[in-house]
Image (tube, rainbow, N blue to C red; front, top):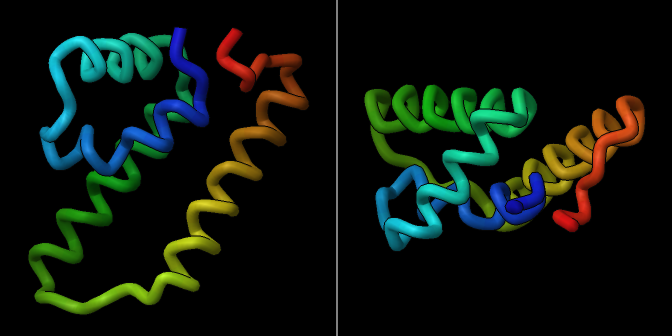
Length: 89
C-alpha cells in the first residue's frame, strides 16, 4: 500500500494526469483512506486553479522546497499523534 510520502512524491504527476493507470489507482486508493493526503490533494488542486486563473509566475526552488518540507512535517506529525504508519509497510 502507498504511504503518504509516496503520494506526495507522485502528486504533481497525478494532478497533471501523467501517471500510469496502475500508479494512479494506487494514489487514489490511498487518498480514499487518508484524509490528510486527500486534503493536501484538494488544497493543491484549488491552489493550482487559482494560480492558473490569475496568470503566470514562477515559484523559486527555495519556496517550493520549503512548502514540500512543511507538508511532509505536518503529515508525519499527524501520523505520530494518531499512531499512523508513514513508512508504507
